[in-house]
Image (cartoon, rainbow, N blue to C red; front, side, top):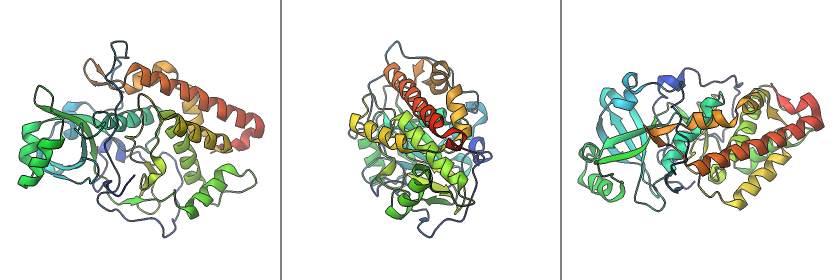
Length: 342
């Protein structure tokens, strides 16, 4: 993504922070890990069409806290400012001192869907037992309350121009709790790419001691991005860690779950996956256990009676999961147990 992305600064909410490690090993990272910087991690953009009447209407996953017990879902905004450059993203401070990134539906080109990609990616990750995707919840704010939270007339005027307001006077979007000690991990840079591609795509190469967890996380991210049709992982600043050696974070998932994914991007992702010779054992097991009914249940609703994703988008995810399971199965047939990382 472009330098317009935002960096997170405050912690995950308690629902994700306490368990984010997911069993991945940690290791000292090279000096190319970049410190947190504002305007670096999230962007708003494209949109599939509204859900059709045939779209699934499942319940929110049981791991999601209820609104009554979740201050991120109920606290009112007390300050807001724009932190995007080519996209419209806000940093919002809520009552009680909570801070979050907020991606509203916007009037920018194709700005009505991408916030849903963040929510859908988080829910699918949780259904797969992954804590690598930052928590993102649907949150509607009063447009008046957000307008009044801006500290400058320019900020409020910009909000009025860019935020999409529904007939009830609400702005819908994704609320993403801020993360402490957010560090960009530039896996797209040549030195890093050569390293992890060797770990995952060269059956003769070994994985250095202490890096097995990172290798498994990157392998999982490749699979996850293909399943979600996320075209935007490798454009820069879309992978991070908490600190120098914390768990890998799959950030910026708003390029996923389009109604019409780019065929060229999907072909490139699938070609890359076919080169992978090492997959996470636990993630593979979770993926095999996630049937179509569980996929639909995971995505659930944005609001009561309103499916988060259209039926056609969900069908696409289900189809890509079957494709990637076939890829992993073929790899296991060829290489046996060595294809699965602990």
